[in-house]
Image 1: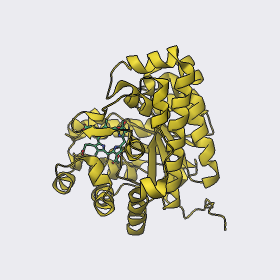
Image 2 (image 1 turned 90 degrees about the vertical axis):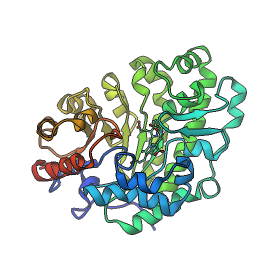
Image 3 (image 1 turned 45 degrees about the vertical axis):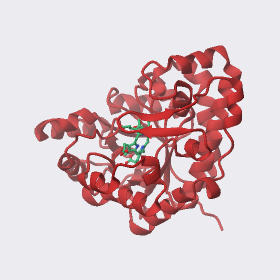
Length: 350
Ligand code: CP3
């Protein structure tokens, strides 16, 4: 039996928009919609490691659904993290509150490739598939599965933690491109295995987060990163689910990213959506791009900026409304609820 979904008019707006089809309303969801901005998240999450919370399917499913219920967003993004597959194969990654992923023994030399064994989703991350199944059974909105893109994962492994300038990462790239490409290939394999398992469990779209790739020049991106990201999208092609590709500070990379093969290209707040559409070309939908910091302003300002994003999307099909990056923890949830209502009331995609 083919599991290729057919794109019919009854499909949810999020999936239709990803495919560039007209829909009754502009769909909206928020990157990092589950998280510390929600009082119900803070109440349920407790103080343990986020990786432990992710490994508990009932809790992870509940945290995934909290923003769906509160905001009425058009998609649920799985409550998980980009470093989950790396932690699951034993690379030694922790997620430190207020800081992000930290690696006790960073990737520094070719021998470190041996520490990257393949992911066996049924054995290593069975809890992720179980969470997807629980969420899909509980909601009508599409579930978005996700993974980290090779560059962004490599940056954590090589730097040992979050980094501003990515000095060690870029140095490895330039001084030992053979090891670099092998590292990216191993990371691409992890993400493919993880994403295929999420789709098999019921995710109806996948997003690849290349959050920090905007630190690269177009030439470096084209030669040293794009091939690995492109292979991920190619190896997911048979699944028939929309593929989304996002990074921050990617203004000069958008047309190259569009060539990696995703249907939807995520755009941060720096590039107006009309310019972004031009850069990604007619075959692609765009996602974005309200500045998350705008959501801290008085409602009048937020409403005006939300309308500006809608206007720049041009009222045409192929726009998924989102922020330009993740929800900031200090955001008032009521503001996001009002953004959803405004996008649903005023957005057009005919
Ligand atoms: O609602 C959602 O978007 C789903 C959950 C989600 C998390 N991480 C949960 C999380 C998603 C999609 C991610 C992806 C992720 N993780 C990315 C790509 C997206 C982006 O923001 O660019 C990156 C770079 C990471 C790595 C990571 N994990 C960072 C930088 C942090 C923040 C550290 C901090 O405390 O400020 C984390 C931790 C994390 N992942 C939190 C959440 C809700 C916050 C901490 C917590 O609740 O313990």
